[in-house]
Amino acid sequence: ALYAAKAAGRGRCELDCAGAEDPDQELARDLASALAFGEVVVHLQPIVELCSGTVVGVEALARWTHSRRGPVPPDVFIGVAERHGLIGALGEQVLLAACTQLAALHRDTGRRLRLGVNVSGLELSDPGYPARMAAVLEETGWPAGEVIVEVTESLLEADSAVAVAALHTLRAQGIRVALDDFGTGYSSFSRLDTLPVDVLKVDSSFIATTTSSVRRAQMLRSIVGLAQALGMDVVAEGVETAEHDELLRGMGCTFGQGWLYGRPMPLAQLAATLATRPLVKAG
Ligand code: C2E
Ligand code: MG
Ligand code: MG
Ligand code: MG
Image (cartoon, rainbow, N blue to C red; front, side, top):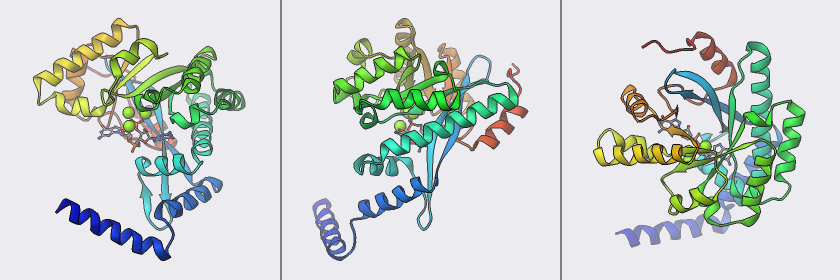
């Protein structure tokens, strides 16, 4: 049945592609125009210090609402951008927008939040990347010390010497490096030792299974301990419930990110959240 479905799928594609444009190509063209018109926007998701509940940072996440298709998930359009030479422009727009917004927030409220930005392996493999990042920081006045680039293991599995060199250059500029989605790749543990990493972001699939499996909880506890022994900060991703929060605090995990603390949101909403939220959580 699986093969039949696959064959049918392929047949349909061949039919579609004969006359119409390749859907990936079409999406790429629309994305290029969205980038040109500034229609790819950035949302900011709070990252909190677990012991106090204080928002100490945000992660910048790209958002694109297609004029006909509606919202396109980043897991779809980031891949399109990578395959069609648009990821550089996309990354730069997200970075510029996020730095501008956080600088404005700092001016207006005195709150300075750390900024996490996702960087694709392709962007890092461009030797000009660190200099362009420095130029954006210069332009917006946002300090390098408040920037954390988030990279995934998969990019580094490719063992791109240029990408790893870029991480070292960024670090020399004062920027920190986070290993994103930790626990989903293949070579996590050996790479932890050799890569320039300051922050470990534990993938949301981990916390999701922790409350139902004692063994998963033990593994998470060990990852937190390992990261701390190596002098890294740990951020747990996908914190959705008070139970997750409590469990993580019990493990000595320092930071958390997830729907419990706030969804990715536009700056105005983030500012409102910060204004109403007590700096220190009661109890
Ligand atoms: P990521 O860097 O691991 O980002 C975290 C993802 O988890 C985000 O998905 C966020 O919305 C989601 N999330 C946050 N809290 C929760 C929670 O409590 N539960 C669950 N189930 N999910 C939660 P999103 O925004 O769909 O982004 C998906 C991925 O797309 C990101 O994963 C990142 O790898 C990539 N991405 C997003 N924006 C950019 C960008 O500007 N540049 C690049 N290169 N990649 C980006
Ligand atoms: Mg990330
Ligand atoms: Mg992640
Ligand atoms: Mg991810």
